[in-house]
Image (cartoon, rainbow, N blue to C red):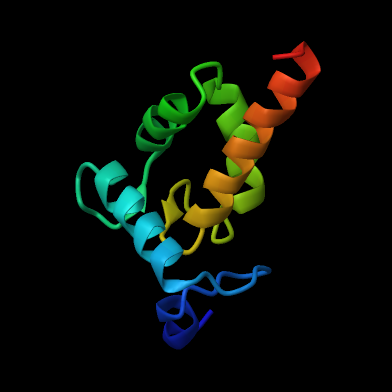
Length: 101
């Protein structure tokens, strides 16, 4: 992915995000990136995921991360982040639908 695509909010295999959504996603990323290294560790990802879905486990995240960590560096960068949020929310919705909530 080139820098222009990143600035436009276009992530691999996804349609471009509108500016408001892109800004919101970037804000969440920055708040989650506690040490400011511009990548998210498993601990940072787990903390955010549990705010969205209190039932998510570290095993759930490892499975999700396996599919999203394109460069296999054991961290998620800003470009790998939007699909993570999408999957966490979809997994929560599926679990709630299955349990009848």
